[in-house]
Length: 453
Image 1 (tube, rainbow, N blue to C red):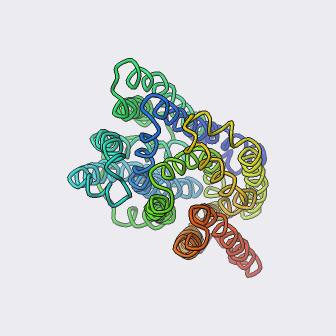
Image 2: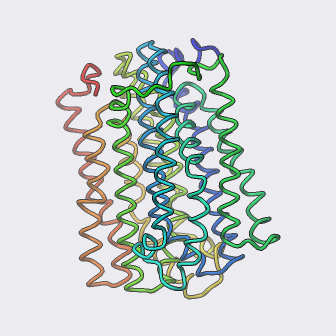
Image 3: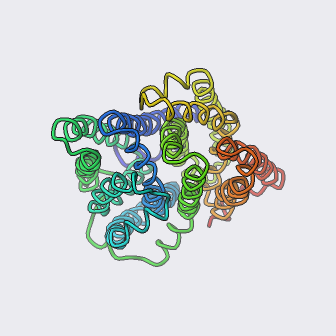
């Protein structure tokens, strides 16, 4: 695809068709990635044991921190790049590519090295017991060795999608998942590497995906591509990247804090198997959340480009379509969780206590998911138009202002069911705040691209 066609269609093609064109590949990519996580957990649950699922759940906070930095640079860079392309400034968009690449490599090395030095006490703090610590340590230690690779892979894939190549970004996810699904059972079952095998398979698959991405950005026919002079860090570009990426970054940091509190709460009220039940529920519900994220990733370059091009009619129309689709996605997730929890949990384990806990938790956690669909889209909408402070507030309010107090109070009255119930309670309040914020901005006429952050 030529540079002209890859970008101008964002301003000229009908919004509905454009959203499908960009979102479907992203949704497929996120769905396949989530399915890998589910299949990986199934391999671990049946190939290693129920406590290994609990050990895997202990690593979720660290995984959230890794994703936090990847989204800080990747989504922040993708959004700024889209806006620059909308302003027909390819040179600045290309410099964003260089800065994101350097930031991902440097922070990947620093984060992986420092975390590995203190890994055992970190996992203990996250809720690991003597029984679950070996599983959590073995899995995370392997992933941290390849942390720079993971950072660069995820960060650059966001930029490839935002610069007009959603299908290539989708294929990246397909390549990594395909390799992972092939290697994981070989390493876990055939070679007997246990949970370490799952981590090794993940790194190898990400390496394959990164090679695909690098091949794209070394191609001079790509809209933005590697060239000399773009790898010098630019303070202004970094500031723009981090200001926009701060919303998903803080959201993932808060998710880390939330999972720590959840793990310690589940440990207190239900023990190791309760943590394992949360690990199962998290994998399943995140499938639908990640589908929603795929929708917003497809929405982001359309909104960012048209916002930069001052086409607010197309911006708001894209938002309406995305909200409708988002509610539909999460409604389907709600129905699956409420009607078929037993069948879903049985895929992960046949342990009776773990199964019973996970079934109850899944039904409670997903009770308000149809409304959550709108909340996720609207929060990402503010991020896509460069209104970082609003997006950060909406991202953090659900977790810091609503969920943490709920986790500290509700379980005191209803035990483990109170831990589960804290999540939909926070969802309800967060949806009301998000809709109120959107209505306020709309009535005040504050969707003005000239106020770009």
